[in-house]
Length: 292
Image (tube, rainbow, N blue to C red; front, side, top):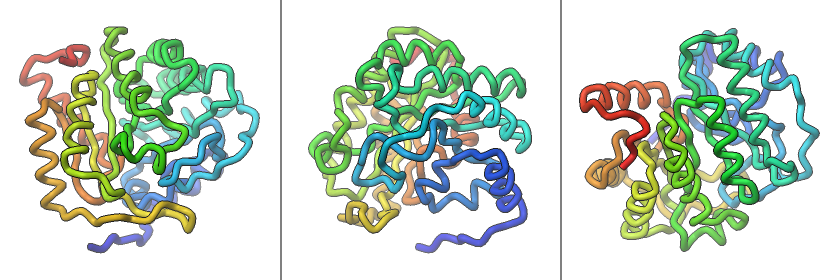
């Protein structure tokens, strides 16, 4: 398998605009292999609240350290970038900010409101941390901003959490979806896993069942790739046919939309996935809040 990393004119333009506004993207910080492909299609996943994370996950190349003070102008600049790129579907994620009293929930809300004030009719997808101290309040606060998709990645199977995600907690991540479900807001829920870290087929299927039972509807499965010298080693490269089998099994479990292939990432083809799901919901006359 090979990935074309050549940059087109639109990718370069996107890069220049983001840098001129002093914005970070997980595309850059996470060294995503799809970065230039997404940039060339005028899409990007904005990473708010700085580029230093308070956690040190074994799979992630984002820097760990003491974060900077929150920038109150950041939400406005994100909204300007969205408008400048002419985006119809935007993804917003963040570093984890365990240092903040609300763990960054209010910054998410400000970003959502700023984007909607500038760009009408846009689809906004958020990808959040687990908010380990303030989860219930954080989820409810963010939902005030009316995101279309609320994404939180489960990342891996519970047996591997201590090695892959040492400051995370499997049950706490599942609780994000249970909390959203209690709010009964018209928001779609999404999660993702990396494969190739040493998980078994049985463990993956159990995670999918746990996610669906918690209320998650959309799913991404992709190959873990080591993105830094200190990252965890790749234990296995998963064959594309295995990814296809996982997709079929996930659909049978009850997920409405599944992206499953080696280069899939949580925000890769996010716009296309949303449109596919929206069409499916319209056909089946299912409302977004009906998660079970």
